[in-house]
Image (cartoon, rainbow, N blue to C red; front, side, top):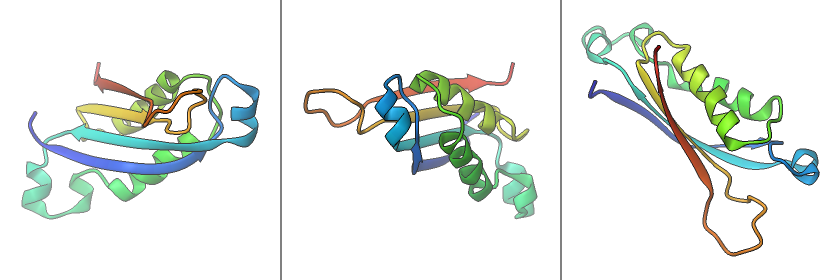
Length: 120
């Protein structure tokens, strides 16, 4: 599959992490998703119903990040991938979750987890 829809830089406040202060205070997480699907039907029909509504997808992803706290970025990424694959148009979802304010006592630019999941 060579067609892709990408949503990059979705910034959402969440309360994820292993430390109490992360859960209490929260922090921004940044989500990138790349969806592999066949867009030829949508291109021919010019109808939103034939593709991924990326506005609705962004809202759904934001609800997950804002929702129930988890310890690990890996867990959050799995939940976000499941949302992406909930759209039957999507064959494969690549999800990256960034935690730019991770509690690391050294200078760093970013921490991120990337997963790729397909239909089983």
